[in-house]
Amino acid sequence: MRDHQQVNASREKLIAAARRVVIKVGTSTVTGPDGDLCAARVEPVVSSIAGLMKNGRQVVLVSSGAVGLGAGWLRLHRSRLTDMVTKQACAAVGQGLLMNAYKNLFSEWGIKVAQVLLTEDDFTNWRRYSNLRHTMEKLLGFGVLPIVNENDTVSTAELEPLASGPRKAAFSDNDRLAALVMSGLEAEVLILLSNVDGFLRRGSRPSAHDSAAAEKLEVVPCIERITPEIKASASGPSASGRGGMQTKLEAAEIAMMCGGTAVIANGHGRDTLDRIFAGEQVGTLFLPANRMKGKRRWIAFAANVRGRIVVDAGAQRAITQGKASLLTSGVVRIESHFAPMDVVNIVDDHGCEFARGIANCSSNEAEKLLEDKKRMDRDGSLPKSRVLVTRDNIVLLERS
Picture 1 (spheres, rainbow, N blue to C red):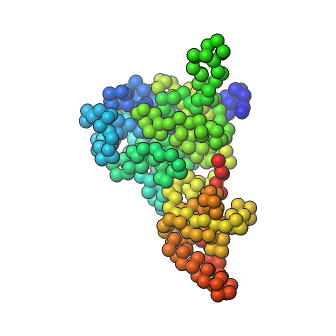
Picture 2 (cartoon, helix red, strand yellow; picture 1 turned 90 degrees about the vertical axis):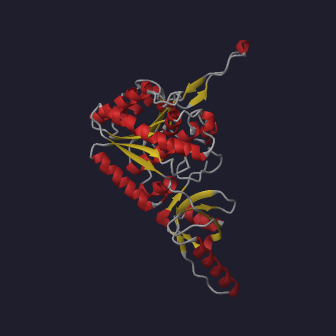
Picture 3 (cartoon, rainbow, N blue to C red; picture 1 turned 135 degrees about the horizontal axis):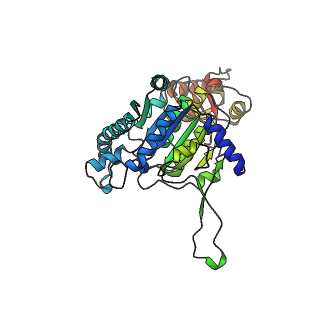
């Protein structure tokens, strides 16, 4: 872990140099306890973003809060938000309120805004992903502030309870969505504003004579690598939101793997953004890792994995050590349906995923090729190997 002087130097260097920034504000920042827009917290964020844009930075705002605003407008108590259709109806009502509020607030600074509503398919399909990136680039070129949210009226990914285990959707919360937007636009900095001061760890334990005192939680000023221990200590969802620290760590990890910098900070302070971009020690700073390029980032993070290919030990070695393509000769079996150009998990014979890639053919065709291989093996013929996943379309995954 770096010392305070090194951390502050990293903050100033990395954040001050950023020309393109993605800022995510959570439900707890946008809405108050009664479901109305919390002007006391939102207006300072708007003011800070206006200052960043005035200084020549390009900004994308990812904003939660539509469901909460809609529920407040409809006078629905939080206890009523138990079924998916009610949440989607609240999102439909609240999204208009959210955008109208932002339009009015940013117009005072002479800033035009654009609404960008996304679903997981916009990140699953490479062509739609490319179209999204081109549109966002054009908006930024026009000097417009894109305001991004998940299209909860038609997509249920963000509204569903956060389950444990592997994530199936491309994103299911706005933290991860913000990181994927950052990845697609190759932004340098991702700021996640919530109701916590940063990533917290337990400080010194109470003294022996004060055993009733609670352990103190301290903000970790800088994280260079997100370890399994750090992930395990992440807390669950917040009361008003749904992501919590777990999804913020996932988002920060994506930012780091994209060669970018992430900051988790408290959005309830009036000058949080100004202090971050002034290089002050605010929240938790996540330092860049080795940069993953364009399509490889999409395969690793943004794509919704459709299928699963189990390979033998020889194929695993060839892929991880020999930089080989995945051939039918090394495939044990095909699990789950997938179409050509879908992203698939590549797992060992114990079911542990070590890579993922873009399939050259459908699962039906792949199974037929495997049957042909088995038949030729029985007949004593020399089976022909086919490439199921080309090396250029394979990304190795770091195991936790």
